[in-house]
Length: 153
Picture (cartoon, rainbow, N blue to C red):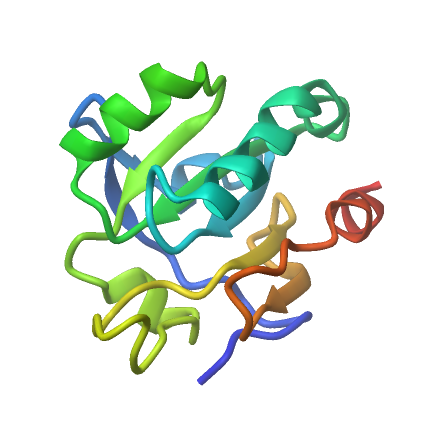
């Protein structure tokens, strides 16, 4: 099942790149959240996508939004990815693939691998309701960040 605009965002608790637990519900009533799923750390399109987010983070912050970027990589891999690219937002490990599955954004097969997250963007308001949802089938596409920002404005 794919999560759509108007749906309650499924809660999750995942390890960040420092091995600390981060829960979507921890932002309830405090911040909007941009939940991004990306296939794999260190791949070219994922790096480009997250660099766009890094370079425009002030725009997300001006919308009172926290960015959480999620992949099925281990938090150890995400720690190195974050350090290498100077990302200024949290990267979360969905190593067990439960969160991507709950959001309906797992590839059946991705270059012969099973259980890789589809590139996706969800704008979640302070009440935990999805205001924008985009799940991309083509891994080379990047979410429309202008639409994400507009949904939070």
